[in-house]
Image (tube, rainbow, N blue to C red; front, side, top):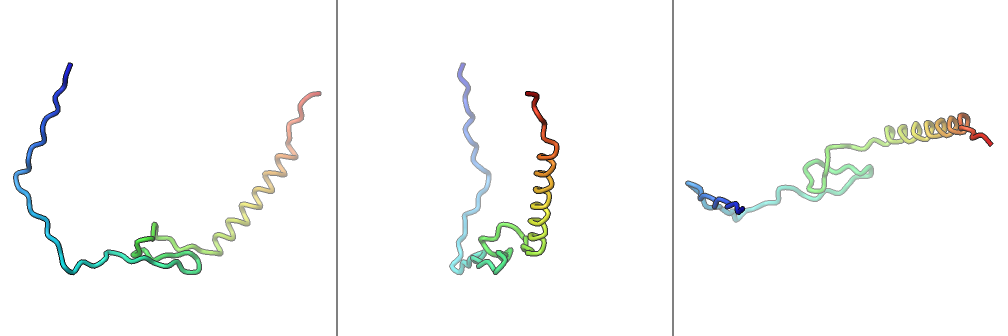
Amino acid sequence: MSSSIPAPSPTASSTPSQTSDNAAPTCTNGIPDQYGHVDIDACNSYYNFYPNFGANAAFAVFFGLFTLVHLAQAIAYKKVSPP
């Protein structure tokens, strides 16, 4: 059993590409500020987010607190296997 792949058909009209003598870069490389923010127009900006130290510190405190609570619960409600 052989299957034939159809040949691509040429396009009806094509326009030649044009180049410009005054090509300018579409973006620039940004340098992160003290909190790691890079302007959204920069080439090395991956998302539009401005880090907030206070929110990150609060998250770290809550994460640590809930980790300690979880550890205390694990110790308090530990299953004891029969001897």
